[in-house]
Length: 325
Image (cartoon, rainbow, N blue to C red):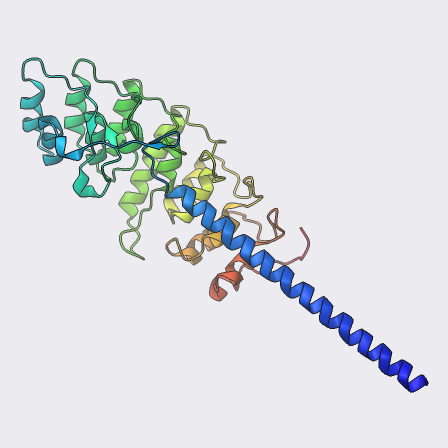
């Protein structure tokens, strides 16, 4: 009798263990699925078309390109000058643009000034701003404001262009779609190709970001509907110069948490594989005092996210030194 009781107890223990393992496995699957859905939702927000008004998509016939827009596409200052000097010409019209050949599609109605800012030709931009009716401010019914185009054009004169637009009344904290100019500027990547870090580009982005901050850009705000902080943007973009600048020169807190409870280090590993040279950026953040023991609102650390993305090499120096929040 005693033998049967022992066997029964053993069976019960085994069943309880199996049930516990099953629940643990289900919990793990639930966590993984939830994380994947969160990341998918985050990325889908990022890649939504900007040219929308409520739920109605804005469309424009790009076959109706105007002489001014074609002159801007040519990047020819004198050609633009001859067009705007024509009698009765209106340089403030809303038209298609920027250049459809640049893959922006027909859903981006634009002012000629915004289209010019996309090309970053300072002389053309200055010429347009001197025309009657042309404004540096956002124009209702268009996609991105001129300032938003200027901070993302990757041109040599971006700093001068941004400075001119701000002097002419561009709103430094304008929200287009889900972002502000400084959101866009801090997200710009200094890489050309997968692993070629361009120091000149990185420093150029730093100068533009500094100019925006000096003119009152919101340092505590983040992309509308998203949860990025400026340091998160710089880290995931792989901009070493900008991360150094924000922390050392501007006093940004390397361990500041976003709405998900994530620091720049956690955000970097959350996006592991989408950025460039993640290991170098993680090491830089750690040098500036990033705390690898911090866990986000889901109880996960940078190490946990790195392991989930099979980033064992990166995870090697991110392993927490304590295992509580």
